[in-house]
Length: 389
Ligand SMILES: Cc1cc2nc3c(=O)[nH]c(=O)nc-3n(C[C@H](O)[C@H](O)[C@H](O)COP(=O)(O)O)c2cc1C
Image (cartoon, rainbow, N blue to C red; front, side, top):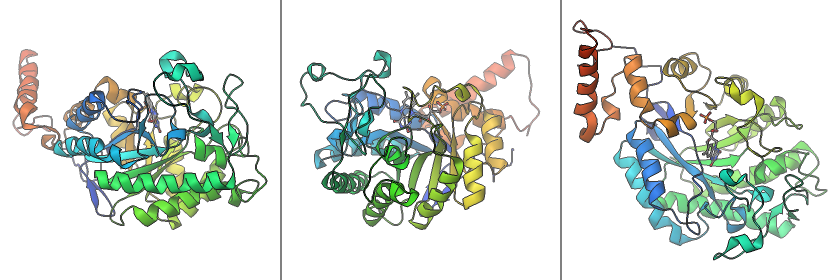
């Protein structure tokens, strides 16, 4: 049997939450909510990721207030009515042995867009059809691209209101039963817009110096930590570099502050402040193209990190964990393609996959594999690491 004590299939504990392995289903927007509410699709999407064996399953970026919605199909947590339908998702994920996580977000100047299959163009007021229109706010009145609407500069009252919306949504996420909460501070959305001098040209306490630009995020963290239970972990997703002025040194400096403020892990992504898609950069064609960011923050700040981006292979993922490059690996598109990827990874690494398999499928998965070996004329000696029984 493969030594699983330190690898991809070792459990991982943060605060009082134990995650069954190091594989995390990365948050992935599905663009098919209905006025902020989840639909059957979300149950299917998140349920199959949980049943496929991931340790921690993140629900997509869920808007903390209506103005934060990136599309007409966003999920929301801006009032209590959302709690009950979301708790159904939580129960489903937990029933499969996975840990339910939620990412919260506010899109700021990247709100009100069409989905990727309609090229993320700005939504016109007429295109909003049967939902009320909503205004777009940002630290400064600078559009995301020349094709997008100019956002309204946030007043001091808007800033206070949005910070409160984050903690109110976090309290609701707790009530719905999520065990891990992630603040989306990456990919050019509202918090990232405050962090970067490229999009934040304010002259008040929330703009200018590094301390001022990080203030919005730090106040959100403070507000959330006051309501998010002490036994539950808090993650922050960062664009560790953003190609327009925010560099690794800025992230290291910010990571130290976040650690002090009670953030438990950093999810290390990049980009998104310019351009249309956060994941379609030239570097995104490389395997593990953002792993170095997770390694740098983990080593320089001594904080747990999650690597993400083109992690597609079991040995590659296992090596990231064993090599101390990150504590968790988040996987996006590979899991969309094959939600059972963790089961295959456990089999190819020779790790005991019993924990991944619901009784409804367990026997058939094991038999299928044995039959496939036999059909290929391979007889495994008793006790061979690839033998499951
Ligand atoms: C369909 C889709 C939706 C996504 N939605 C989100 C999201 O809601 N929040 C987020 O932080 N990243 C989102 N991402 C980015 C992924 O979480 C991940 O960082 C990215 O896809 C790179 O990982 P991968 O190469 O394993 O796919 C999304 C990606 C995809 C493909």
